[in-house]
Image 1: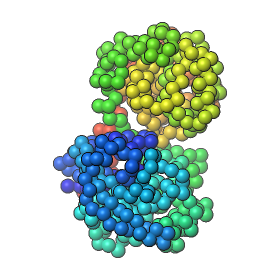
Image 2 (image 1 turned 90 degrees about the vertical axis):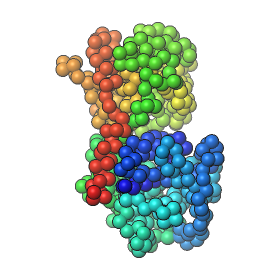
Image 3 (image 1 turned 30 degrees about the vertical axis):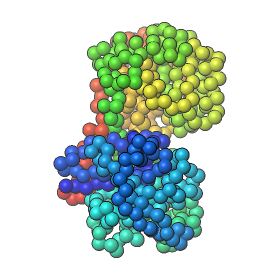
Image 4 (image 1 turned 120 degrees about the vertical axis):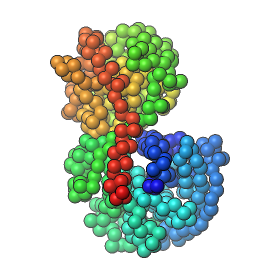
Amino acid sequence: MKKILFAASECVPFIKTGGLADVVGALPKEFNRAEWDVRVILPNYEAIPEKFRNEFRYLTHFYMGTGPYVPSAHVGIMEYEFRGITFYFIDNLDYFGGERPYSDTRTDIEKFIFFSKAVLAVLPVIDFKPDIIHCHDWQTGFIPVYLKNEFSANPFFWGIKTIMTIHNLRFQGIWDIDTVMGLSGLPGDLFTPDKLEFKRDANMLKGGIVYADYITTVSRTYAEEIQTDYYGEGLNGLLSARRNSLYGILNGIDNSLYDPRTDEMIYKNYSLKTFRKGKAANKKALQEELGLAVDPDKYLIGLISRLTDQKGLDLIQYVMDRILDDHTQLVVVGSGEARYEDMFRYYASRFPDRVSANILYSDSLAHKLYAAADSFLVPSLFEPCGLSQIISFRYGTVPIVRETGGLKDTVIPLNEFEGTGDGFSFRNYNGEDLINTINYSKYIFFSQPQHWTDLVKHGMKKDLSWTVSRKKYEDLYNALIGR
């Protein structure tokens, strides 16, 4: 039996702020349990719903110092089995109390240094020695560091390998060296440019990249992009140096959660054979619910996103007046920067029959929009993987994306002459290219219905589930374990 431990700061269904939680919640259950023992370890946040926390089983607790600033801290261990997967939760109310999983950077640095060390410290106590610890994002970046340094003298930890997965390189866990030394107890000789030092500060993600056996990120193109100055966030040199240990493996989705045939959140279920009537019914119902003009011939564009520059909202702002012609509707679901929230509210008040601004996140409304929209907008500045374009395929909604990261890896642009493609894409990050691509999609929708039908069918037939990605992780795990 091969043993894998996922370590992460969030996981569906317990706690979620972004796509990381979806990955950590979905991937472990994909493995064949006759061959793989995959477990997950998380912080025991007070914000985890009580329906779960009340079922957690207390195992034990002990006290652990992380450095001279924190000579002793409580480490509780809770256990819970969910859908056949064993979850462990590190309990410390001082660090993981409160309404939200994350706080200010200084506080987060301290609590995730504690979490990284606690993950290793609890393993002998629960008598679980993984072959691989699969670390996710900067919050777990010090696990490989501690493993190869402070814990390396303990025979229990000999032979344990680590994988560091970068979900978004922009977030790295950076603070001043003196504070991080005081919080972590790591020796000063580790805080050098070839190890943990980064522009005179300490960098937790860099530590993970330096000390992990393998590094992965969440799409093949993003793995290539982050080795360049433009996308590398200052770590491109290190990532290039480790390129022989760097792999891009696309995220998947849980097809059972996103299936228009069975989805209970949408107005009317449909399949590949019945998508015309099904999508028409969903569009009509959503138009009615949101107060838009009820018209089957309107071109309905969906946008579900954090409203930030990274997601290309500055491009959308630049071309909004040109998107909203008499034949087009836009439905937005998301929140973020005030200027973008206010922009969508303004257009919704100005064109209430064309624009619906839902400045919130609602899972049920998101599902309804996937099913109702004709196209789906993802014009990101960078996108490590992106899940919304993958989900939109499942519902026969045609994505319009910028060619970056996972968007480039998943969306094949329409070629009218060859009859290929499943979406629309543009390369350069500018508003004119975006509006030209949106207008081209409108031309196909209104004037080339057969091409549009082919786009929908090609997208609905794609398999971008976790089954495909799981096999690539299995190959990586097997190579690292040497079996």
